[in-house]
Image (cartoon, rainbow, N blue to C red):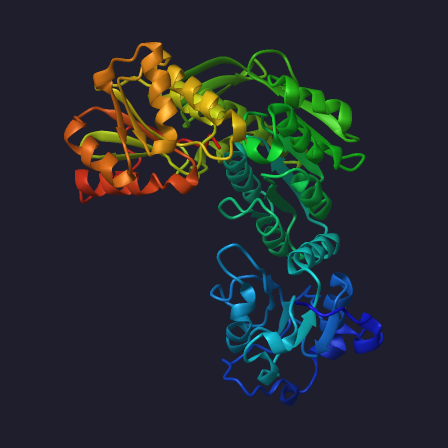
Length: 520
């Protein structure tokens, strides 16, 4: 248990000059525990001085030291010269790695326990120590201050589907015109968003930040930390219903991003989603609407999807040929072009960079082996993204069959059975030839497909990714396309990798289907 905190001033006195702290004698860092060699130079723009960190976090400075360069939360990711924040979690506790972080060169640590409760810490005197009530809250406070100290424009992106791909593509487009950082992978929670913000440097001009949620209030909290200049809401769909209750609860949570946009900022909304379009009424910012179904600030006409990707006319005029399959990716492209224009990127440059952007890993990513096209969308899944994947697969010409390997969609709460059953019916209506359902939780998908009329000998239920691989290998034929998708914890990435390895030792990504973007 953490003891009551003492006032910061009582321990650290007045706020120290960071320059003075960064110039302390090296002898003040002598540690009784082993430590690797450390760089003494503080990076330009670094402000993580001991007293400043304690003040921002509302914590107690227990031990002084030198200014750190940035913040890390994983002792395995390189701690030399940095500030390590010890986070607790369901499966790990960063306090177990505080000493390792100091041994790896951390200049400071933020802890939520007494020093005596952390084995070996009392003997380590090579780093400053700040004790706080809540290390997760401290991480957010530090990130908010870091964002405040830099002039980079922040673009916040949320939505039930498409936010990761939009983030990846926008980051690539902006990087061609200005120093840009973006969320790595799907760093979109109360740890990932701060870590993204810490990557902002004095020279950074754009930071593309993905903001996700699985519980009420999370987007509002993260929006307050990131303080975006541009907000993008891609769509509202049944996702995280276990934490948000209903589709209206999802919409209310997503609306916290435009609601938190400062006066004068730009809010880019999906005009074809009624719940998203209604968010125009709750933002202080300027609003631009994106549409594939009608006239808007940014709209697409003459939409087509074929074996080479998708094409459309931007604002009914300029032809854009996007090497990305599926109408969902046209929405993503419009979000990117709207934000890039606001950031001053010329349209020609934006379109060229957009078409050259690489797909996000395991998000409708085509991979070929043994004459079979495996569409790896195994990163995540909700009802809307699953339907978008089916639509994209159905639109692609093929000389073989269209197969689907789906697993359970998690965090749907009381709506889970109904939504899985409805998805099964959608699979049959989309014209899929074979369905493989992986895991007992996905069985309602099979039931829905059968109830809709899919022949029983074309519907297969297996217990695990390994069992799915064993079933599919003798079933797959040259020219087939198979879409693999489930919530992340189901682990269908193992099915994709297993099929690729078994079908061809030299399996390569890409094949005859152009690189595609994420549905989630």
